[in-house]
Amino acid sequence: MGLLSIIRKIKRKEKEMRILMVGLDNSGKTTVVMKINNEDTSVISPTLGFNIKTLTYDKYTLNIWDVGGQKTIRSYWRNYFEQTDGLVWVVDSSDLRRLNDCRQELHNLLKEERLSGASLLVLANKQDIHGALSPNEITKVLNLEALDKTRHWELVGCSAYTGEGLIEGFDWLVQDVASRIYMLD
Amino acid sequence: MIQRLSDLHNSPKPNPPSSTTTTFLTNFFNSKLSIESQISHLHQTQSTKSNLDTISSSISDLEQLLATNSYLLPSYELRSCLDSISNLKSSLNSFVPRKKFSFKNKSHFKNPTNPIARKNVVSEFEKNEIFSEFGKNPTNSIAQKSVVSEVGNNENNEAVNEFRKSYDSPGFEDRENEVLVKDFRNTEVGEFVLVNLEGCEVRLIGCFRALFVHKLKNCRVYVGPVHGSFLIEEVEDCVFVLASHQIRIHHAKRCDFYLRVRSRPIIEDSNAVRFAPYCLRYDEIDEDLEKANLGEESGNWGNVDDFKWLRAVQSPNWSVLREDDRIGTICISSSDGAADC
Image 1 (cartoon, each protein chain N blue to C red):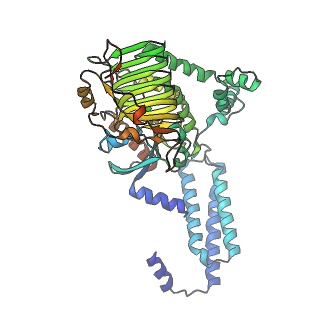
Image 2 (cartoon, chains in turn yellow, blue; image 1 turned 30 degrees about the vertical axis):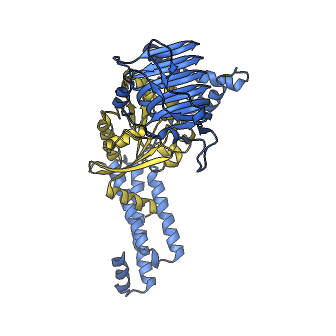
Image 3 (spheres, chains in turn brown, yellow; image 1 turned 90 degrees about the horizontal axis):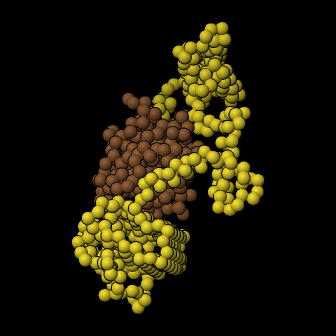
């Protein structure tokens, strides 16, 4: 029995999931995490580096890695890929000008071998802002239909500001990861 | 573990090692033979999932047996047993359907004979090149080829542009030397954009949710409280007076920012930018600030993070504006011009 299988066993026993939050800067990653953890979202500075939140969701322990999205630090994202079970890509649906950047960064990310098994949740954030693109439009713009057929993905419209849609999205993600890793016991 | 260790010490070893080795080897050899016969049986019959499973489980049993006895086997026997197990596994694997257990990550790499797929591969590799080459004239053949192979992506860009046209977020675009005024009081506006302005004065009165600023030169921008975030890119020689929850400044040169902000403002790829506290007045601005949770001065206007200067010492890219150099309080209204007051 190798070390890796021992680690896997421990992980299975504690029902842990590792979730990586990424997306362009200003998309609301930290706000999403703070909101599902019921924390104050009114004073959040742009993330310099990363935050880790551990929270219990259903019977699972989620380790959420919230990594800063500024251009300068995007190259460090790859340091967080290892052992990722679920990937959350957060989109600012009201930032029409940078949707091209957003699509390119997402598709570059998905080419990464170490993320090939991870379930992908795309959060079309800021739906509460008047004039934001709808979830369907975001699906089209990000060209999600063209993803590899083996990829498990889901797009959910949400607002980290009001909290709407967040639970729905994370429900899907946790269920999907659980059905792959823990075989739904 | 402790249990196992004590068992190890307590268990008597009546058999001399040689005889244990011989019995083990006979056992091992017998089960190996039986597995081999099962595998050869697979050649004749249709291989079903269940009998593949039984064989694979008996192989792993055998492996287990070897592992438990490994400490009393001479190294040569151990090695030959391991070899025969791996041989068994590989001969079984030839019956297992190929697809099983494999992640199909980059499926288009697998059929390079298909010309379309090959083109995709090319476009993947050259993507980086394209975007650096895009603005220039494609003089060399590589750039030309890559532009052709990027058709799929261009279609998608068009889709984005179409969305942008049909939605046309409210804002001021492509103006020169004008005074642009927008009063948000009693309106339902989410995000607002300022794009490609030169020599303009912009006054945005009232509360709204988000502001995107892109490509401004030599402008003065006075903004009421922004409820959400503020994103500024590519601005030169401008003055901004604004209040917001979050402020991000990218590619700014020689600009002054008079801010009230709940979190730490950040700059990236900027230089010669200076900061000072908020100094805007219009009728009922206090109510608006209160509504946006920006009623109190947080002092964050001077806590700037420079993402291009991750060190403890002060970044050379920004500074606090000296009090003598600051503009006075700016009073704006939708009709008259802005004035010191």
